[in-house]
Image (cartoon, rainbow, N blue to C red):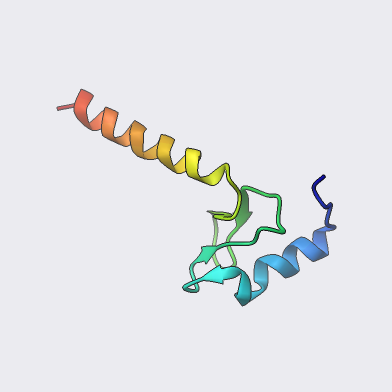
Length: 72
């Protein structure tokens, strides 16, 4: 069962520099979210510890390759 966190705890995890690999990739196995708002700026980051992040990236890359081939 996934552990439920309140909004403050989720923000604390997002802002914790120990949850970032190379200071850029958010990696927190305790965080159930796939998308996390960026620490700075506007947008979303993937939680690379979530197993759903990899099929999402694969799908985006596959879509880009297919569109590149179709539009040649």
